[in-house]
Image (tube, rainbow, N blue to C red; front, side, top):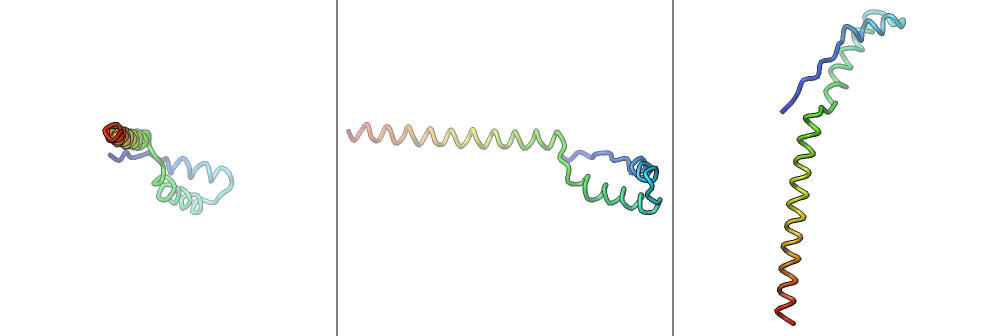
Length: 80
């Protein structure tokens, strides 16, 4: 699930212009920030999905290790 993040390019451009950047450069910079920087940001839902996946993977790995460990222990007990 991808969530769109709103980025106020007009407000960003106005802030740059008020700082002395000419309008064309300010608008170009705002568009570049939206296209290249904002596209790489992670949302809360992205983090939640990654955490859920990571938690399930870790739980599965621990379960497999415990099952193998109990199997090895049972085999060793039979041999002794």
